[in-house]
Image (cartoon, rainbow, N blue to C red; front, side, top):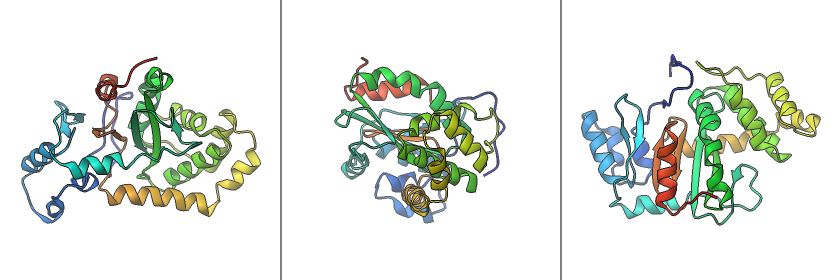
Length: 259
């Protein structure tokens, strides 16, 4: 994928793959092998998703609130949350009625935009116990992206996943992809308060952490995801770093409330 030319942190998004049909378990997998008209594919997808990603005026994807006629798709989305006690890559109560799953790449500028401008404004929903956010890796931009994902898990082992993620995203450039060398990752660990930097540096070479990143990325790709950031909020799909009200509307549609 060519690197985009960006104005400072626009609410943009990378391309949503046709394979999104697969991630939602819809019975249209033959689409991947057909030469079809793009508008018809988008219309078919929109008609079947509970809240399909539809192109906005600038070509970016936005959330639509069309009801789903596909029970299988809803069941698949409801099965996605981990809801694991003590999950270092999750925010919010284990029993929150609304779970947002967020797929990200640490070198994705739009992921950085969402993490620094939108996620903080969702804190009132986390504080009320209405919302839970679960992070997922989707490595798209090469070895440095994977190394950063491994590093985030290493920070998570010491209870600093979100602090580390915040530090990485806050330092992201306003155009192109961040450069994240091993030295950079250790520096981010230091500034985010990871207590044992020696253990952190050692974990950067941990094959189990690398395998976990690969497994999560492979799972996302097998479901058809090819762009970040990407979100499933209960059974609502949002593609891209959309405005805050897109997320709050979805959260509140499932009973989410501010503290």
